[in-house]
Length: 113
Length: 115
Image (cartoon, rainbow over all chains, first blue to last red; front, side, top):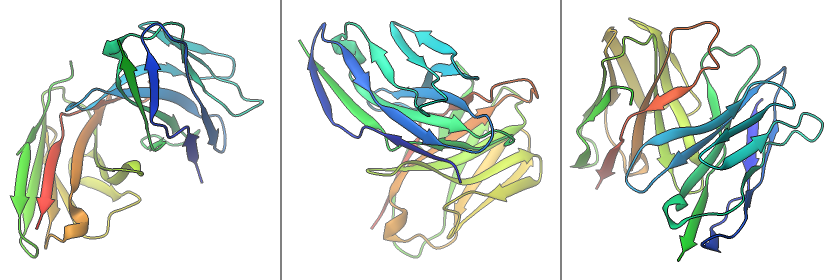
């Protein structure tokens, strides 16, 4: 079956530091890959996505590249801000599946001023 | 923002009592989902719906039932709540678009405590 493994954290960084959150996956077919973000007390929001190999998703300074050869979709940001403090979830939609997302366990990021 | 509301937002109940959570959408999307979020587990799918009266089980469906009598409403029922069902419950919706990448939009969540 499909599965997502992501760095569990928590991750604590100083403002303007470089961020990487690792995500690897197992899936059949050709999955689409997503990063969702959950700010304190809120639901999940889509941060970025990639639907085929070598696609790069980007949004709000965050980037992730769909690497089929390493089955990875690592999240990066060059300079984090305090406002980036949140929980980040990697997820995939398996090839051939119309509905279901499989999520990683989430990574708590705290950015200190 | 997708028009998704959940009610109630917080609920405390006792073991053995029935509980119904409601998800309401104003977007007329075909697909609706119920997830639970627990520390160390991320989000896990409980049930989903692909149309009115069309529902199916997710990976953690035991102890839960759902109903969808209208496009806009998706109800999650705990017939007899247990302490293991203490969790945060999220509803999600996705577009009825066969070419979409199946982005899901999430509601604000319901925090349920079963004593």
